[in-house]
Length: 333
Image (cartoon, rainbow, N blue to C red; front, side, top):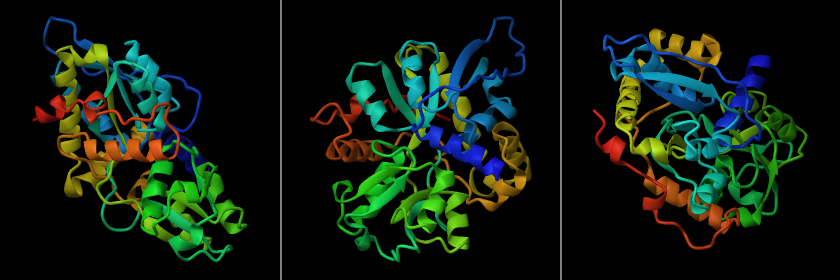
């Protein structure tokens, strides 16, 4: 249970939902044969399987092969590191796309989304909207006027995914009340009828269903990525930017198909995240684009939802060219 609690806090953080930064750790790649010192790239991230290409690329020596030394800095959430990237105190952020990211870019912070990370896999839902059994919620249409638990509340990636689920019943976020409830507490909120539904993530979704606390009303859309890679503006213009991305993409390519759940890769992910191998084996596998291409259409959709919910400090949508830079994915091996 303690491991699940730690994982839930990290998952909340990855989606840009908590406030404070945590400590940092440093990971250095193996020494290259060149006499020139490798380029150090500081990466702000949350230790979750959502970012497995980073861990695999580091373990397989892909950064070292690109003459890059990676400094891994653990943060509480991606949003807390946006300012760090904009001021070149970190060069890369792996995190979620909250309303705060869009506000930061609109306010002039020099950052861009350059790639995607974990996508929702086909099959059993890893994430989804669960209706409360205690409240007798069995369909999305029953949620009009109801309270829905979302980790991070308004403006979070979870709120965006909730909006997509509600659209299936022709509902919007304006027709419900989002309540900020962390993942570990959502099951209890469902069980006691404190909320009519909760947008849940693995392993809490599976536990809620197994314990008859609720029923999955809608899973996350297959192939959608609400987390990704963010570059600081200064780093974008360096030669290391493409080399770093190439190494990361090679890590993603090592996670395609059945390789995603290979014993070797799961061992790497377990070591990097602190999750147990048994838990990783029981979870639906993450899916990654082989080139980690940014999903401009998803980001545009997120901006529209955040605008409609009043989460943004502006009213006219920004063009995606102001948010996304796909050049690195386009040139990835």
